[in-house]
Length: 355
Image (tube, rainbow, N blue to C red):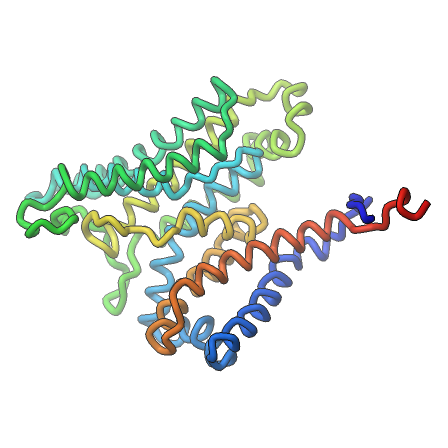
């Protein structure tokens, strides 16, 4: 028999090296997987990881995918640091896209300077409102936050599908489930003529830096870290647990809502049923790969965005199923959690068995 024993002092070096070790193990697994699929693993990894950075267009597309991943991951990082297990970034993103689209459609025939700010504001508020539902249930009735946030993801998805088939469907769209195209006054400005990189990507990076300053340099950030590390000690110190819970959840909802509205008012330009390939779920991996640190999330979001872009290219160039990218993400999270486990714990023989 064996048992798990906590290490007296986990290695600081290995704690920081854990994400890189997990990436290496994932690449090894990927090589074996590509070989099993009858593909050249070296070529497949080149297409998956190098080709997305091969020219200006691919880099711009990678940055477009990085924006929503980063926004969702930064919000989740603060939640997890406060021990609030929010799995609802996907639903909050979809709610933000839905609320922002409803506002944007009010300006289809308008060139008002207020169109874009109001659209963004509506998306942010919608994400916050969606995050407020499980937060209220948690603080009022002590409901399971993981379950409520996951269930609300599906409710948000089907609410969006209902909207594009019903009240928000383009009346001149020949019955297709999509809204009318947004006016130019509503769309986020594109930064470069050669690609689709828009203002939302810049906002994502700036907000990640703001969250880093908040978490690392402010008194509120200190409360969040203490509350997440030792809730009884935080309560004894007089910290308001409900206020901290509400803040991190609404902050995460606001960022996810911004990610959603930035998608529809950015590269898509209208509301469609498939605005997200699972950014809110992948953001969980980004948050952990970035060590629950907003600055680390920038690097991790870039890596995951490369995987997203590389998956599209691998499907086109080599006929590799797009599901392989999802498998890569899952395996990456598995190896990351496994590395973290063995950094904090070790497997030892049971003394009872030895006796």
